[in-house]
Length: 467
Image 1 (cartoon, rainbow, N blue to C red):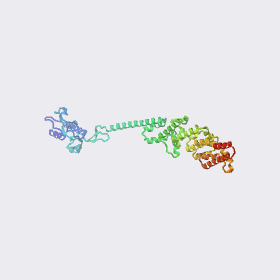
Image 2 (cartoon, rainbow, N blue to C red; image 1 turned 90 degrees about the vertical axis):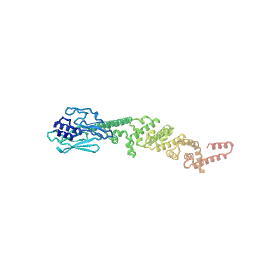
Image 3 (cartoon, rainbow, N blue to C red; image 1 turned 60 degrees about the vertical axis):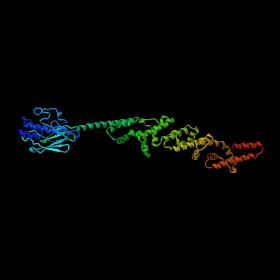
Image 4 (cartoon, one colour; image 1 turned 180 degrees about the vertical axis):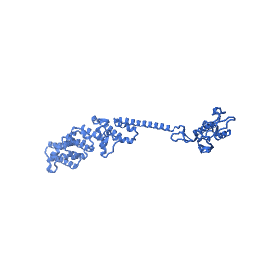
């Protein structure tokens, strides 16, 4: 019996029992299973370049010096000497156990131990042939999903030897990622809301909070936002632009234009009604400018044209504008007419210049029609040139007309306002008009120089000089 016992202990890698000490078959079987389970549940340590350590198969511990292990109580109550107990011994090793499995059954069963350096050992490990013993571990494996170490017994049953942390770690990581994502989406909503609310547009974003928090992409959110009725109302001019073949403006571009328009109107003192804000900061008065692609520079040009050249000019300018274009201007609201983007700014300037020419004639006591005023405008005559030119014409036209009538039979008449305008403004016929006036002056001078008396000669020279 002792020989059989020692043989089994050697097969299990156990030290022989001290002399005089015996173990029952049940005790051997119990220690066999415990040793196998302990070996199977060892967590392999990574290969290291550190000095060799000692491994206790019973406790599953590594130490650098066997003497550091405190003496432990043996399985039958006896305390071992030097910390080496009868169910395990120390072995110097530089490698770690990867797995312990069993092959075969009964007397032919073999214990296979695989190490981290790729080597393995094979030991005979016959099952208890006496029968009636508890199932023994035949293999172990690690669940890749959970990290649990699972033992497979000889009867086909399994048992978790140690719980892994993979499932818990994955669940915790997912929870943390979800929380971070929710926080990020909340932050995105808060930032977007703050930006829009600064322009009074918070009402556009609030109904779509759920979309942002659900993780919708920025591109999808933008599409959803622009499909809302509130958005379409707030940025209504974009629809006008698209209908005219122009591109739709971004929210920042749209609001930026509104701010620039408002700045122009404030600087020129236009009534606040022109740029009053409604719901969500909407400025309906600017929609026609944005829809008509009117730049802030053009808007300022229009305001200057209306204010400086009409509203703040001599009253004759407005009178001439109403006289020339009253039916087109309608109610006489010059500012509204000039600010209408449907009216091209160049056409507006052409009409204002024609009115300024008509005003110049009125100021000189003369009159002119819209056709003649527009003709002079096309020749490049400005309002200021018209004012000074008509003052000169008003000085000589009455006498020149009279002389033209007198000398008409001599081929030098008539001398009309149109003739005078040709000469003064340099239009077509200017050379002939200048010759005709000079000739009339010569004829008058010659007439008076042929009379008798010094007084009459002096009168002739005076009149000729005035003409």
